[in-house]
Length: 221
Image (cartoon, rainbow, N blue to C red; front, side, top):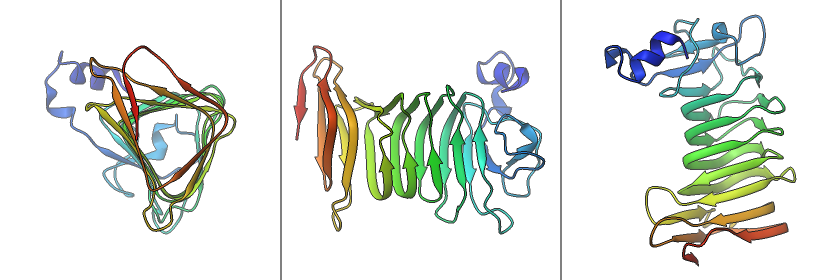
């Protein structure tokens, strides 16, 4: 995020330019997410030259009839990330880089994480994408949805946490009841009343370690 956008977002400068924008992935000379020239604001043909910020969305689509690979070579903290169902390329996170977002939708293409962490503050949804989790930690608050596609655990840890309410939902598909294979799973309740972890319409297999952390009440249903 540029200094000007940072000042706008924390209120030192007028707030009118700090609205959320969608940034479409349309690489020019390379496939690096750190290159502002590769992001188009508002549409596949919008202006380039500015990096997405904390209030913005990342959109991976078939822009101009082409799906393009992306290498996330920098830590990213954004509002939303979405791989459209039309997207047919690969998004790869370099080792040690972290990705944080409020809501994530992985509906198409292939997403490959590495040794860093991924944090989903409000929801994490896979519905068609081929998703490889980080060998570090995938933190998910409030909602984890695995409807279709694939989830490769990569020997990493998944931590399910309380969101804004008292229930964290882990949901599959009522028609197919997919299998979610995890390597390590940690249930981490919080709040004065603890957390309910509500599992529906999927089969969860933990292949290495299942852990409950903290001292708050925990309900699994």
